[in-house]
Length: 144
Image 1 (cartoon, rainbow, N blue to C red):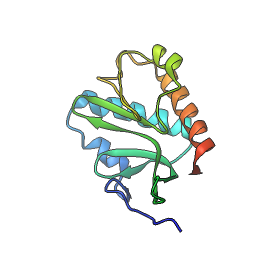
Image 2: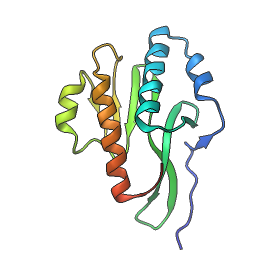
Image 3: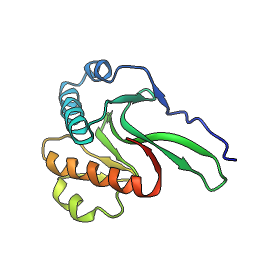
Image 4: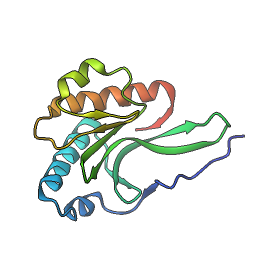
């Protein structure tokens, strides 16, 4: 039987809109409002706060190699000092053609680091979200 674990970054009842409105940097706040709109329209899901600073959409159940299982957001974003970070799970490994079209960015395993949305193609962001959710559903139990 799998042992259920609770991550430090877990879903809570805080308001994503209030969180975005509390961002002091006007440009970052505006970028996050734009991202909120893209994620909502693309996923058709309600945003939820995950931890103190991540706005997530949907959930999936993951299993660790030791048999533990947990819940995490399916996709989302977070305002960071360096700019918005997008989270597309299960990661960006197979999305190279789209990433070439998105605009300036840096890449982590499941993180797409942006300085701002100024030169970012939001239509490509929407395609990444859709592909990520579709791929996540192939390998994990999802709730969306």
